[in-house]
Image (cartoon, rainbow, N blue to C red; front, side):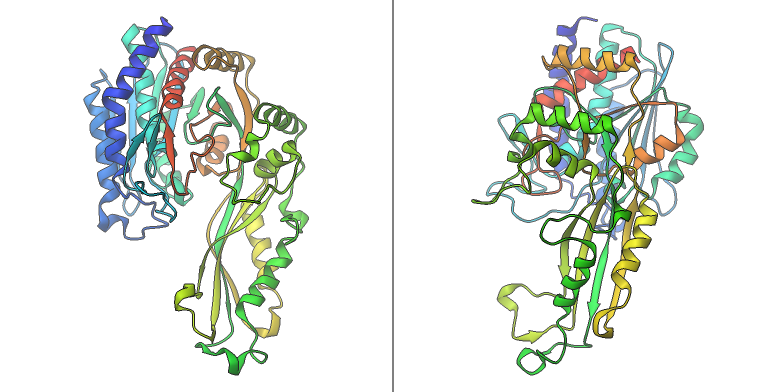
Length: 465
């Protein structure tokens, strides 16, 4: 393989073909079904899938089979099968559904408003991870350009990942014969600690999300009349959360939500903290005067990858400040997002969480936890020495630095499914969500040079599979 020629091919296809399509893709408000229950009527998902489908068809890969698979009532799947010119079987994965808008985008930017500034493409979903289908196909095209042999390759792109991939198991059953038994699974939906080397994700946390509602009245009443007699729903919600979390440290109290961290993962966290230094936390937009929960960078890495953590991501029953009268509100609903360690069982965690919050409600008020999604995490199987050597070689060749290994704090439910379905497969989980890329939040961006280098690395690794 001529590596300079491969870089030139990848640079060209990104500039001339992929970036214009990603610009069009960002404009489509293709929110995941959890955030848009009317996704079928809206048609945005079909629009996003059609855009990716047409681009893949335009590449005219001989003997390839491309299909949009649709099961009744399910989000669609884009399935591309490319016959190999060498032994082996590779599965490449990504998704096209997006997180909701989120407020706080700076002037000139917006979730559905693609903007290229220097090396960055701003907009929702470009890096998380609409680019995956284009990068996967481009990697194979780069090999074909030089006549480099590559294995049988399947590109599987779903539209339900941001909702927990609840539609995907049915498609995996339906397509299992065509997928076969992968030797290598490549997922491009993860993050990177910096933009200077290839980062391999070694673990992903699980997730429980749901709505905790505390109801004290059937309607709001004058706060001067009721306060001191009627308990505050917000105070009770605070009290219930204290059963779960130490509000002074953020530590989850119950041992049921914790696991023993493997020694190898602790060592990888230490090495990552050593490389990243203050970048472990300076990538976050702290308000003036705010600082992280610890000065120990290794512990910060472990906190976001192997320890449980709670966040309240939304609320209902609380009016905006400008419309808040002197009313004792009838209820408070808090949307909870509980990240679980990679090896924790999400279903058991959900049952424990529900019993912890609903049992013995203060003042006899109505307390209920309505679960939205529950997904266990994933801990990568050991890499073969051959794949580890190939990863380091690819990172050194295209980034100029050896690869790094670190867990991620987010969740990709598909990885847990694949780990169970293909226990003998090797996994490469990586991505372009580096410092300040801010997936799910405002000002999300794709770092274009990293996406190009990563495409080159994927081509190199497919050829070596």
